[in-house]
Length: 195
Image (cartoon, rainbow, N blue to C red; front, side, top):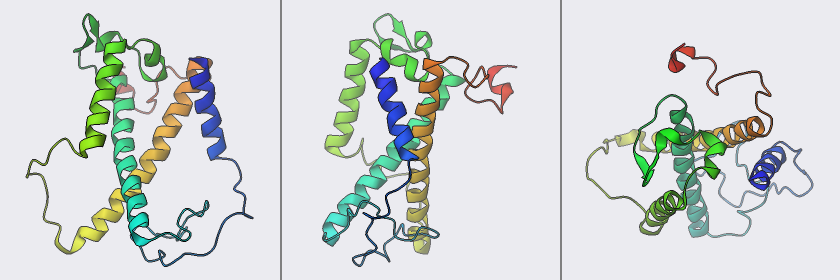
């Protein structure tokens, strides 16, 4: 358990380390006009992953970014929702979601059958790509489709950073309870906790 916390703290600390400017490439390889290139960063590729790749490979990377962004948006909601509401179903026989603590502390409390359910669901969605195409809920965006795609990329990027910060904060609070002097994760909305 401690190794998971230490690894998450090390990863979050590495995210804020100064970038090595000597290794970054300024070549844009024709991707500077792709959707997702926004001011003020422009085309941001500090690791040079787009150097000498085809358009198909770039599209594969963009699809992965979109997929991870969507997963992160759900992860942020899933991290915050149990702070204020519990669904009360059994994640395994005799183990209610009401009995499982929030955040990082839940890792030790979820039984093997609960982990198996989550791994199976994630694997099935990843293998088959979607949970299903239901044919409804798809708005006709017309000429705003590119704008909405850019917004989804931006929201996904923000959610990836937000989830890392939630994980870092919760891990630090797990190691040193009350380090920030706050009782709850969501501090600006006390009515959510019935206060």
